Amino acid sequence: MCGISGLIHFDGAPVSPVTLQKMTDAIAHRGPDGEGHWIEGNIGLGHRRLAIIDLSPGGHQPMISSDHRYVLSYNGEIYNFRELRTELEAEGYWFRSKTDSEVVLHALAHWGTGALLKFNGMFALALWDRKEQSLLLARDRYGIKPLYYAQQGSTFAFGSEQKAITAQPSFARKLNKPALLEYFTFQNIFTDQTLLAGVHLLSAGHYATISMERPEIRTHCYWDYRFREPDHPGSKQEYLEELDRLFHQAVNRQLVGDVELGAYLSGGMDSGSITALAAQQFPYLKSFTCGFDLSSASGIELAFDERIKAEAMSARFKTEHYEMILKAGDMERCLPKLAWHLEEPRVGQSYPNYYAAQLASKFVKVVLSGSGGDELFGGYPWRYYRAANSQNFEHYIDQYYLYWQRMVNNSQLKQIFSPVWGEVEHVWTRDIFRDVFDTHDNELDRPEDYINHSLYFEAKTFLHGLFVVEDKLSMAHSLENRVPFMDNDLVNFAMQCPVNLKLNNLAEVLKINENEIGSKQDKYFQKTNDGKQILREMMQRHIPSDITQAAKQGFSSPDASWFKGESIEFVKHTLLNANARIYEVLDRKTVTLLIEQHLSGKQNRRLLIWSLLNCEEFMKQHL
Image (cartoon, rainbow, N blue to C red):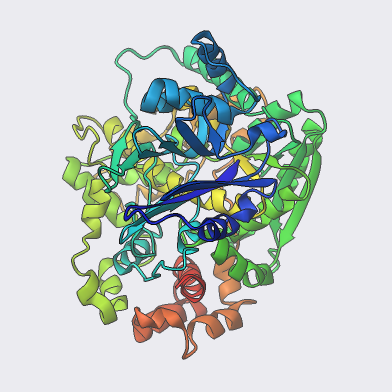
């Protein structure tokens, strides 16, 4: 796990070693174990190393192929690198190290971009072809590792984080207002845009090429999700046995490494099952939990602390367990550092992830996470059911689009952006939402097809946003975060697993008349243990049934209470003061009214307040 960066001057100007050094220095936290630079005239590649596999100097990057044609700067872990190495050795390649980096280098040299489909893991990479004078950028199937790029004038730059790009003295930092509108619609960014104008995030499952002959970036999709009903489904028992086999295989694959490894352990079944299997291989595995001080919480927030369940599972699996309790002031304390590392806000309250990574990093260099289980196996049924009764694709888009306006509706959004509306009115967020399915098969014949569409959408957007957040906040602490659920074989299984093995109540929901959805359907929205049925049944073999049958619960803090309680003065000081920078683009009167609705207890605006706090800090630090 590492950080990469690089730049090309298409006007032929030589790359400055000082500039390249600044780019790698900006992401030094991603790789404290070493750094490397390679410059040849107007092209330069940089690298920061976090040594996980083969800690020797043999893993130094940028890495040059034995024929001196290719230069690689790579970030990630390829869990099937040993199998690929055996294939390449049979083709006549020889290896100087035991790293997966050298396997990646030879694989790209031998198979070209076809190698990307052979990689089972997470990665972001840059490969310079000295013969063709061309650059290849690529990102893993699921977008676990980020890769940014920008072209200003005659300079093209890229990096694992935006900070590597903006470290160039000549880079002009400007707010991307259309992307900000997109963010305040979905609390996420679905396109390849970022909040910095001109900086793009290479899409998951894509590679990009640029060359001295054609100095414009061209992107290509090499893989995409495809959730669909199988033509000839097997029996439930067959699915259970195959899921158990693939889950064991996925966890075992991701235990590879030459450093100590641990696991996040919440009170949920995804992290619990991963920990259970990992603990079989590593006695006294280290496990980590973050809980919350709920002394001022109310309502549903009283269930947010899962420490008791986590401690019970730790005792069962005999892990060496560590936990941390977060209080209201912890959010205020970490916000400047969090915003610097996160670079731009995405998908909800993320500061608990920052502290969880900080805790784990004190003891291990690699940690296993349960991310992906919900999105692959239907962990959010109350979302999918809202669109299960759709009449056609456009009707589906209308229903699901309205649900995913997570903070405010369109009319309020127009009021919020009224100071700059002329600059963003061309942005149709419904079209952005619809474009997520641009290359997808949109022939929908049955309710299961709409459910699979929702799974596709959330894997492409919500899960991707989670991965970006988890990468930034784990690497902030020089910690590698691994996600066993995103093993290629397990993902392929999940995409072809029948919907009726994932959801219990679809048939009942379909009986509800459309006019009754507001009343009757709500009872199914509240049954949050409805999803992931086959996963729950399989995991009963590894963890207690009271865990596998528990209601779905996210890793969330009681901010609704804190924002109008212990943190109220912080919210007022940050967002209601005369010098707040967000009002350079947002309407002060409208925003103040929405904030006051939360502070007075009239309406829960916790997501909006969190987003405003993050955007304010973003503007202070990154513009």
